[in-house]
Amino acid sequence: MAGIAAAQTLAKTKLTTASSMNLPDYLVPVTDPDTGATIVRITTPGPLGAGLACQRAYCTHRYSSAQAWNADQTLLLIANGCNGLCFLDGRTYVPLFRRQREDECEWHPRDPERMICVIGRKISLWTPRTNAEEIMLMAEGYRGLQFGPGKGNPSQDGRRIAVRGTRADGVVVAFAFDLVSRQKFPDIEVGKLPGRDGVCEISALGSYIRCSRWVDGKDEAFIYTVAGDLVQSWTEHHRPSHQAPAG
Image (cartoon, rainbow, N blue to C red; front, side):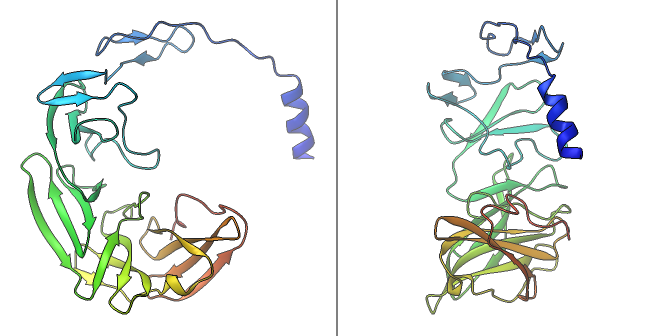
């Protein structure tokens, strides 16, 4: 009945055409005529200042599920289309500085000064303002560690992450790592699952790891405890997606 009611409501809905707007000038606040929201264009092609420069095609934050702001919103990261990792003032959007790194780095959700980075055999905490780095793990016997890849996220408290890589015996594995205790959890041999490698990510509370596998054109999901026990799997395409369970 709820579905029928929703369909009837949608059938009576009238579409409203959005008001036209010119492209805002760079860093000049404008008001959306329909919502009243303030809009600020924070990138523009060419030099931005402080050594930052944007390409003409696009200049944006890294990805929809990657946090653009740090924990206290004092820094904002532009990673796509900029000449490196470009950091802006998180409130005024004025360019501040840029850094060059090959790691997969995501903001720490509690510590506004640091990012969590993964590359090769290394997991580290990096401070963009000073470029200081604290190595948390050098994983001997592994190579090609990736944070996700591409869709890596820490637990809500920033304590745990999940990474994927290749063990010395050639098996693709995933494992959880605790950044506070520096504990590496057992390997999950995801490379032995059907299909080809997908994304591995930690749950919000740091208790589970979700790994996806591409099987016959479908993005299937497998849920493990951080101890490596399989607790659930889904054969439906992309369900659940982009974020592991809350536990």
